[in-house]
Length: 173
Image 1: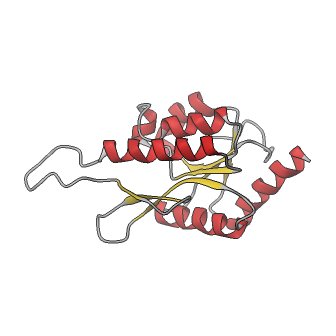
Image 2: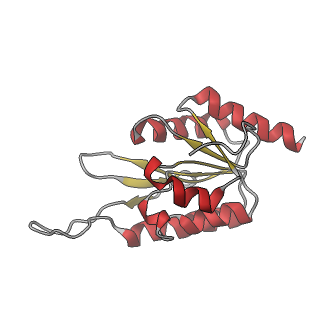
């Protein structure tokens, strides 16, 4: 996935180059640094216990399980698509209520299939609200078809994310 141009003032920032937990921690740190003056909507992925991945709302702390228990011997996919869609609807409601930034944990397999958080991505774009996310490299073709040329790729660095945020505000000013 390349940048259409090196211009940081794109409405979507994709952070890439670190394991998922590190990127999600960066998203949390960035949202915290913005403080109460910036209304942040969205979800980050957390793993409070082994194999207990969940999405946590940045608005109210609600948690949405990523996986469901299917019982021993099951060979079906353990993703809890219903819970992720519920998280998506919560984010869409938060966007509709008004926000300055949307943080979406990632664009992955479900989003590539136009489910999961895909409607939250679309809602953020429709609201003309900046989006911070990550995209696994294997989903680059689908992501580019969805978001090009609206994104810039950033390294997993808090200063890079802050630079992207500042560039958006210079463009508006």
